[in-house]
Length: 266
Image (cartoon, rainbow, N blue to C red):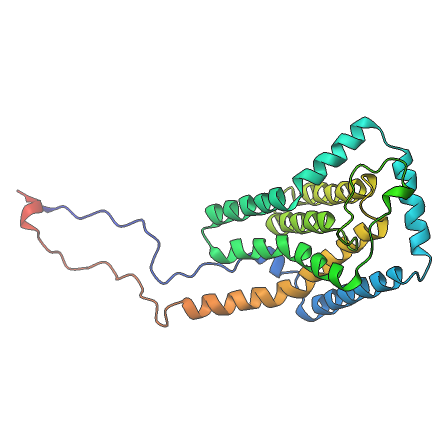
């Protein structure tokens, strides 16, 4: 008489915990150092913006000269490219890009913590830029001083650049996703170049001073450095509390032979 046994299950054992989100990034995160750099960067951007608005340091004269040079150098190809960047990173399409990225991360990882982290890194620099604008209240370049202003935005503030801040957030998100993987240096360089292109395009169309775009990059990196370490700690605490106190281990195979009348043959 032969007993037919069921094939062992291929499902992962219950009680196995998922690895922490973005482990490669955690290896380079140093809470105190990052917090110091981030706080210094944010404070430095705010102070620099206020000083520039008050006319200190001669930055306004340099900014004006560079914006006027860009306005005199307009060519159709670069004009259209800069206007395309303006439309792609406008609030509506920018939000759609961020949403697509967040959904893609959630679909691939199936982890809400990873998707929320990506959302914060992508949107955080832009949100910080909008808050700093309200504090600094720097006027945009005067279209009357430019030869060929491509866009006129008279009812909003200039410092720092929201488009560049969003580009910085998206670039940092890509760095977060590829850090520690093969091909990461190529992605990081491409993301940095994309941020530079966005910053130059804002000066080219005549709606931002060069110092606005530089401040956006510094602010975006500083905000992420300041907030990412405590966020990762919070994620760890939430996931730790959500785990069962006594995970149920898979039962050992039954060593005794039991005969199932419906599964025996002579």
